[in-house]
Image (cartoon, rainbow, N blue to C red; front, side, top):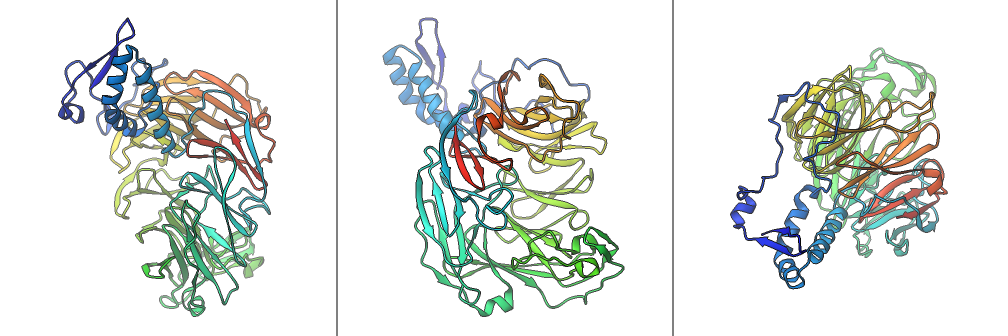
Length: 561
């Protein structure tokens, strides 16, 4: 059923077979989809003006289209009875808002300048990476913002800032998985908290309703056998330790004059065994062994890294070499191991993902489509795409990266070492197109509908057709200081309402700026210095929760709108 608005304001609906809606389009209606052939080389396919066929209103990855199909019959009856298209417009808007709330980085409206709507003051993300310094770690638990605040696990309603619930925690608590907004995903279905004295730790699991599971005592003997207990993804408790078997440690020619001046390689050592158990029942989910790989000496010092058991090494000189120490960044979708001999990640389901390049010189990142990509810093070759279950699918040319916010089919983009040639891939690594980049892109900000929004190293923002690589528009800041900071992608965030994109960008003149652009045309809607919108410290992060935009800092949370 399709609707067209006539001159008198009435809506006329065409009846269409379900088969036509789900498959081929009826006569007179163009089918949705990408025009570019997979793997096509499209050098010279760039233009300088906006693509007039592009839509300024994304269908949000298809979710909105499904909702409209279900709602269309009721909307048709009301619209015909009223003789106007207002009801249908209202249905469309309601469906758009619902769909935006489901998109990571989705905000109901970013087209108008932001102001503070509410303020909550208190410690956010207490602990070594929280209120005592550095950005705060949080979780989006259902439609709530959740974080540790001193000795509580606290949840805020994102629309009002009201405290939804608070759960008292025991001694030395650790809750997770949490993440740094802007750096990694923060959405999770369950938060796990481990607390109590070393010999008497217990664990609880909490869902969006704020009702904790019954505390489960952890066996003190498991500490020596399997390592310290830490909250894991998918409602698990993790333990990890060196295997105690395998190759005898071989320091090779590894030497450190200071923790910052290390040479040589640690050739061999003990594997790392990671175990996951259900937080509520204690039943083992999986056990995975990550084999030791030869490691540069610089990656075998833990001076700046938190080890698995929570200690931080302050050693110097050759004493800074620690062949046994290791740690992990525990995210919402995978566990990323680091330290001497560690070059792997483990998915929440227990699949082992092997890193590429040398340990400490790459990353494994989760994709919104459910897979993973392993890449070596600065390398344009041997980057690997994994499926959700850990199967290696393809090796990519170009250092691959996904958009910070994805409201579309999902795209991986990679530039060669010179930055002059851009490669686009499907989420499974299938080549989509390749062509001259024209500009040196440093950040894939957003994929909204069929438009990719990228930032170039000169500060200009480009809109490309994700199907073909054709340039649709370019927006250039009105002014940029000669001593502008390098565009290294370390302080950038992006959000979308399905029609517009909101970018957080470093600004040499104003510090950090917020810029809103129309996705279809690149039209500049508004911009402001972040300091004019917020009264928070520099390490403030923005996060979208249930369609609301929040500013999070170690000393508080602000609602924006």
